[in-house]
Image (cartoon, rainbow, N blue to C red; front, side, top):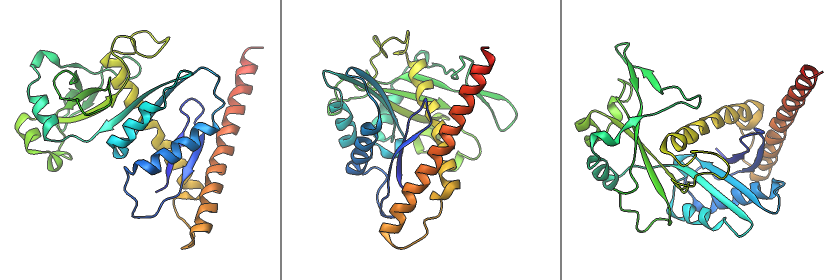
Length: 259
């Protein structure tokens, strides 16, 4: 699957990079290339503020280092990404006291809960892991936030030994969004509740991926790299037309409502 970049508020796909079928998902050079192409498409003002959300499969030390360099005197870049949990992370999680865990919230501010296998409601919980996990070799100012939930039957076979022992399934997100300052102009955006909900909202890109697959990207037509590259461009243009049409329709409905 090619790498793609979507703008969250307009839902536009602004960059797409075709890759060989055996390309690793966390190839830092590929992610730098597609991100640079996306930034060139954005009509950024002289002083701009960007938030970049990246799927956890793309995580690499090199990519996070690169994201840090995108902040300049004229541009502030905040990022949030998934994190591949390892033994060091699990050891840090084990040190968290029970009172460190708080209930997670949905984007609408309601408690984030799912229905368990026996019909009971299970709430997600999260905690700040930054001061417990050693992040010496990682980008300065990086934070780690860990989420946990009681595993479903479907997840039972995927649990690590640590998760089986604790009875929880864990996920971690990484961000450079500062705890005190947060996002400029957004009150309380540095709090763990906000950062957690902000990253989960990134799941909406899955709908964009499904849409671009429906217009052709789901089935590349040839063994030729040139033909598949052209097909990739046309698929992106097709989704762009659909996005702009929906935007125009929404604008006309809004204008009609204000008459």
